[in-house]
Amino acid sequence: MEKLKERIRKEGIVQSNDVLKLDAILNHQVDPELIMEMGSEFARRFHGERITKVVTIESSGIPIAFATAAVLKVPMVFARRKRTLTTDEDCYCERVPSFTKGIVTDIMVSRALLSPNDRVLLIDDIIANGDAARGIVRIIEQSGAEIVGFGVVVEKAFQQGAETIRAMGIRLDALVTILRLEPGNIVMAD
Ligand code: G4P
Image (cartoon, rainbow, N blue to C red; front, side):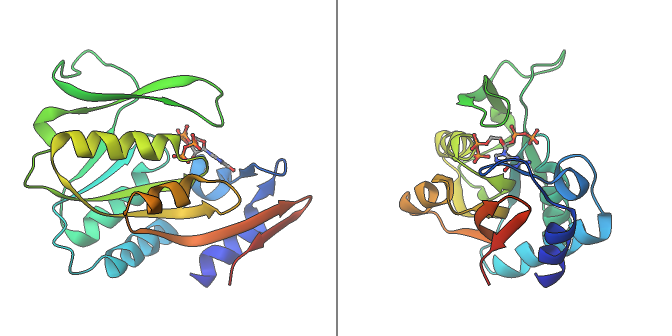
């Protein structure tokens, strides 16, 4: 997706040699047209997989997962990070450390929303160390549903997350691969 690369080049801010601020396009503001294009691209790449649900983790994965689910015409489920008044007690729960926040959080999905008959496409915004990603994979595995693939907008290839997911035998596709971050320069794969 050349257009996405261009937006990352223009609007991404290198915060350090391992953190890229993408608030303008992924983590704080979204451009609905660009998000819909990402959704169409994931739907195209995973076409034919008989996907029944798109699953993500709140918060930044939600718009992209929604767009993908809208194109595939299937429901979208997002794992919650906080219990609410109506949180189902009967849920799958995994504890994951958060790379940017430096804390440990729980991610939860109600057992009522996943079944062994589901064929799940996982979607997320950025994969870094993959702690959140492995947490959501464990939740899907607990449910007995099948993971047909994992779509991420940005793979930071200098961190291990994407490779650990691929090593589990899961197809992980990234729209943009970042090879390294230098002061004022985002080096992306072709
Ligand atoms: P992950 O690779 O499975 O996402 O897990 P990891 O523990 O490595 O990363 C946890 C959080 O840090 C995720 O957000 C992820 O998107 C974010 N993150 C990692 N590297 C970067 C980066 O270079 N830039 C930005 N902007 N974010 C990064 P999260 O905690 O789930 O937050 P959110 O979804 O509420 O935004």
